[in-house]
Length: 402
Image (cartoon, rainbow, N blue to C red; front, side, top):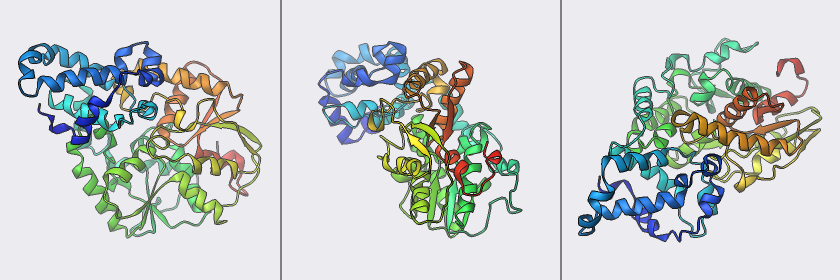
């Protein structure tokens, strides 16, 4: 494969690495697996060898050594065993935009036919079912039926001011479905005129990006844009940081887009959402795609601190230094054991705070941390920030909020 998978800037930045190893020191995969081949510094070194073997007279010397099928498959294994958390990029003293480079590298590996077979499954599921889990897309909003007082329209309207884009994980995983349930209750309490897209919502495309299938996202993007346009909405909100980041970076800017923490914070500030005392000590986990990915650290903390009686205790590793939960980058599909090992380090960090609960703002983080805690009998409550706010809605019967 030629260098067309990379931008000119990415090609230039490949040689900017000084080999300092700081990326390896903070990489959750390296720390969990004890394998330096999962580090950014190793990956860049190998990538440079491959790129040189493809270019000019250097191919005579390097081609037969570096572009064998076996070598590419071994290298690909390190490329996809990564959560794409972006901590390497945050630590890089040379300012290399490593996360974008890793996405281009994954696409390169796909074009070289050196990639995990789970990538084919992701591509097939999204092409056929429009969601990453190959579920019936007509069932995307069936979680509404499990709500005790759902309206007849099931929150699916022909026209609305705001569209709530649910995301695949929250739509289909029972453990995560309580998140959209909590959010629609918050929106109702604040009098927001909103709608779900139901079966008209397709995957945002983020799993394709992480799988190295960046060149196949256009149909998903076009469909979702048209679905929102058809509702006449001006605003789109997301409880999923990956969906939010995807729309922020890869969708045309036709609408105002908000992560739920930003939108709920505005509701609180404007006085549209009244909350009661909760008397709870929590810590907050910054989701990688919301924090390092989208630069949003302030809004979630403002929401938490605005709830009467809630005390926020910061993690030892917070904001741009927050430890990954292990659930990103399609890693669970590629190496579930490594994903769980990364989650272990996250849970250990949480337990050191002494908080009653860990609050995050991502359905995948909730799912990954909850799964690890349950399997290993760790006594810590994991909740999404929407669930925390739902518990505090003024006048609410606490028995309804779980």
